[in-house]
Image (cartoon, rainbow, N blue to C red):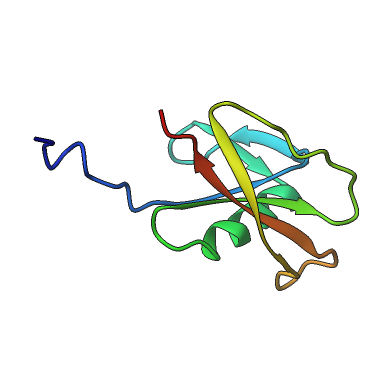
Length: 100
């Protein structure tokens, strides 16, 4: 039999956005790295569009990007979305772990 822990699902929302950050500095309170720039804002908007337990990769439509292949995960086209305050539409992909 499987335990409840083995069947547990993390109810987190993860937004991943391809791109480079503008700057990085220490957080005022924790001292940990804090990142700034449009890619950080886009990643936050991608995360908000997730449902709990979902991971979404966002790729700005103004950048060329080859979707990676992996034995660990696979991507499925989800939709195109233009986020509030962003001038460029992003293509969103649902990310799934490979079973096994």
